[in-house]
Image (cartoon, rainbow, N blue to C red; front, side, top):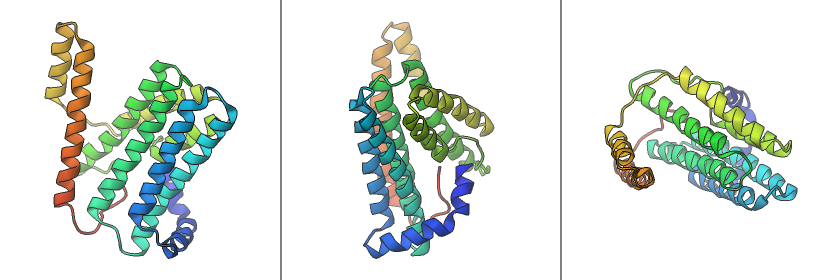
Length: 238
């Protein structure tokens, strides 16, 4: 939804892209600033303890993070600096920033653990469904709750003082988006870890193992992408 709105506001972002490019900004520096702002928002959420000023600061940081997320693509397009690896890094940075924000909200007790974990899981699945579907040649640019929509829900619910309601909305809408992007994928090695740890009554060890191995896999894929990706970027990832 907001992805289409972003296309409609192309002139707005093109204007600001030229201004920031004149200041020396590159797509990667814009992405990095967006990431730093997301970290700032995460810190504010984590230490807020329902402090109104910190919550408002978190909302502002998050809104600015979204602005620079859109700006990096505009700079890359206008000045011919778009690359496949740049698109890969942009997608990864966006996802890390979103997970930091949602995790901080959960850890700060600003929403119930149940809804917080559902929001995090469904948000990850939205991006995974698109990546997996597009790898098979399907057009996956569909869904009512892509990343821009989810971040806007967080911002608005924070300003309104209804963070729990916002997290519930993200959980439900992101789940609907996953269903819209219907896709099936199997990860047998991770499922095996869960099964074995459950049988041994060591679920926590299984989850830790998944976390460590998945993190190693991310680093391996970043390294491989850095080695192999080159040339013009095909399109902006969600």
